[in-house]
Image 1 (cartoon, rainbow, N blue to C red):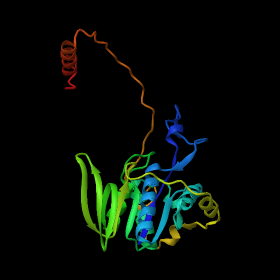
Image 2 (image 1 turned 30 degrees about the horizontal axis):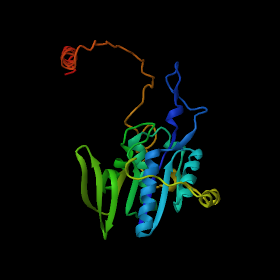
Image 3 (image 1 turned 90 degrees about the horizontal axis):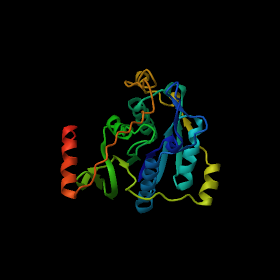
Amino acid sequence: MNIVVCVKQVPDTTEIRIDPVKNTLIRQGVPSIMNPFDKNALEEALQLKEQYGGAVTVISMGPEQAKATLREALSMGADKAYLVTDRSFGGSDTYATSYILAKVIEKLGPFDVILGGKQAIDGDTGQTAPSIAEHLGIARLTHVLSIKIEGNKCIVEREIEEGVEIVEAKLPILCTATKETNKPRYATIKGKIDSLKAEIENITLADLPDIDVTKIGLKGSPTRVKSTFTPKRQSCCEMLEIINPRETARMLFGKLADAKIL
């Protein structure tokens, strides 16, 4: 079985700060990490490999520094890693990014299963992985809890608002993972050492001759981020004197109704 995992290097959101004048993200001094949901996707890929055999290929789109995230994936047990990087890819939104990654997957494929995190913690759109499936014309199942392979089909348990849904689909398929999917493993010392020796190949625009350049980069992105800002904190609190539970509940309900919340 051939499995591909899409991972993203993101800023650690616990360290994120916003420039109060420019309203832009301050990246200087902010550590970068593997997107946590992508780590769950990688763990699911490694479990599939252990159960059914095959290989796990990891790809990431970003600057040269993103190779640190790819080496982390290799240290956990991935077999190959590729960095998708080119100045012409800069400024790509989720649509352009998913299109580029789909073209890379076509170049490296074929694959049976494609995995990614449900969303990235920096953008939180949850659009990129499902859009890859759309570009490739394959089925996609999000928020998966488990994947079972039977011949040329897979049976997936996925989390929905009402509980758990069991879905059957034909391979190839794209799935997204959540924190509830599994618990990512720790890299071994040997894995870390081997990852430092591993060669990570760059894939650039020149390696994708059939790509439509009007669909990549800033010019090929239909969305624009005009500004980023920290919301102003506003506190408005009214304390209700507790008379008795029934009367207090009546007062609270009345105030919520007056505020048109209920």
